[in-house]
Image 1: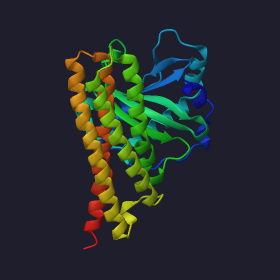
Image 2: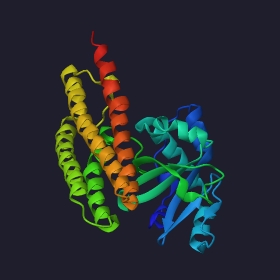
Image 3: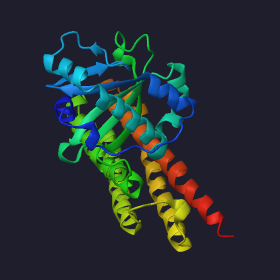
Length: 298
């Protein structure tokens, strides 16, 4: 967990300027109540919206120095995350009911992926503000996003990271199955193998799809009707593979509960959330925009 060490090296003045746009009430609330979570020497530190350290009780002096000296950076990170959610994600809207029920309280957990290129995976959670420390384990997983702090604009709408994440997460399921399942079970193994097979198909289709996309994917500016129709066709194909994975995960989740394999169920549920989020992203951020753009050709 080197996030605090790596982030402490960043100078705000060297980061890209963020786009100017107004936030609607949901995102205003999230920005106001956003908690940040970062690792230092195998310990996760949870910061309040005003950067008080809520957890753990024993605080390393280096972390105290980071908070004291990097307030401007932390402010920037919050703005970066919120504007990224608006521009490149559907997470907040998809989970707005739980977010609003929890008075807009969200946790953004940083996971370093490539420190050289300032790339991080952000895992989002929501929890009641009254329970955020005392009942931390009750938090609800919302989903994840991938950011590069040295570049706000995303190549190909950031689709590469999300497409590559599916086989990666499936491989993690196999690893977790080895450590969390109480005993080997052929029925469970069959589901996992089927999910892996569909995931491989999804990934191969995704690689071909990405190769056809322009790097700067601005739908309202695209004039190539043929390309737009190919984008909608290929996106739906990938969405359909994800729907198949979702159904397998639903059935596997029920089977695991029936067999009382509760330690493994939570990993299935988290992955299912990621799959559903990507389906929503395809529907609203890609297919919806493409259909609207094609309709303008008359």
